[in-house]
Image 1 (tube, rainbow, N blue to C red):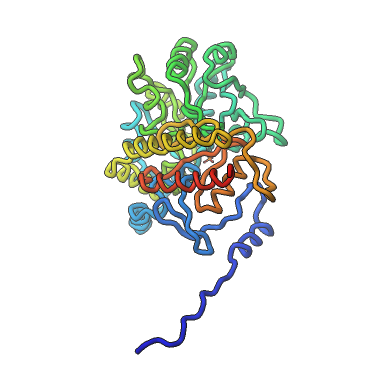
Image 2 (cartoon, rainbow, N blue to C red):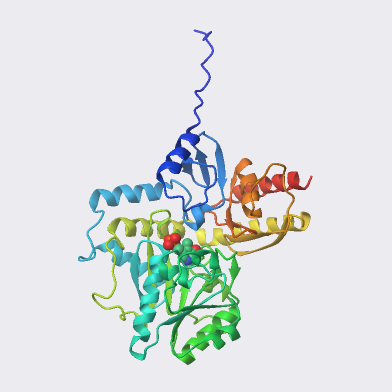
Length: 429
Ligand SMILES: *Cc1c(COP(=O)(O)O)cnc(C)c1O
């Protein structure tokens, strides 16, 4: 029988306002948030509470390495949580041992410690440096300008950006910053109290700046000469994002003398759990037993659940050849962005990156649409992109970052470039 009664119109409720109100009443306002609330996702797409779809090229800040709601992650969570979620580190369990083995195989001879976030991984490396230098009275860790190492007290002391320190002085002692990619500055900064150097292989929050091969090799020589630990924060640039497991492996590809390079410690988090919160650090063999029983720990670190998920993430990356995908789709995205930069120099100044870690530096004064109050150009453009259905991540006032899922498809990258161009074209019209 024919239906003669027209279907009722969908009920439209503005759930976003309700959620925002809960936040403004009950959540500490420490984040500058965009006016978006998401309810679910699939692959590289997110859906907001009003049912609108967005292409996610931010990847939850380089976290959702397999995209959203990947069935393999869901299955790993279900299967492991049916068996064992948590036991504490008083006991052994298989997933932690297996994950440590997998990470050591991907990096080099050493051992791993598991924690719950990036800053905790760095904190562990800072403690390693202090233990290493302790008997000689050495404790200092030199880091770089524009670096980012996390938000705890040691994390902000290590971070080379004043905005994270402001209002929280005095800083934890023993951290100083020198310009990035400047070997002479690092050499000049060393003091008898220096125990370690920490850098990011690709500065992330600082605007996607890769270390040069000469810098990495020079720091290695310097640390060997002066008996210092070379520590690398791989929290954002690690886990295959650059097209190799760690960024230094990619940066030093084909560089004479680059093959044997290894730092002494590497911190990991973000993509490691594919969205399940976890962190880790790897420490090179000669120092792997420095943190002996009772010297360091965390209740949740390396739980069976977290490790089962991280193992599954590694398995999927391997099976689906996402290392190569990050390289290929990353190159495709970067080339497309370079083309946009050439076509719209009034909006995009430069594009730089490695694999699926790309920074788009905006021109100094991109045109403003009437009625737009945002101060930062990166935030202004990000908002316009949201309105057009594309998610990106600002880094500072002048840079937009793309940190998408490692399984981003070429067609999705193409769609992202199209949205970006349509917004830029409107801006410059
Ligand atoms: C995100 C980040 C951190 C901090 O990680 P959290 O999990 O937020 O503590 C540290 N270092 C780098 C390079 C990062 O990008």
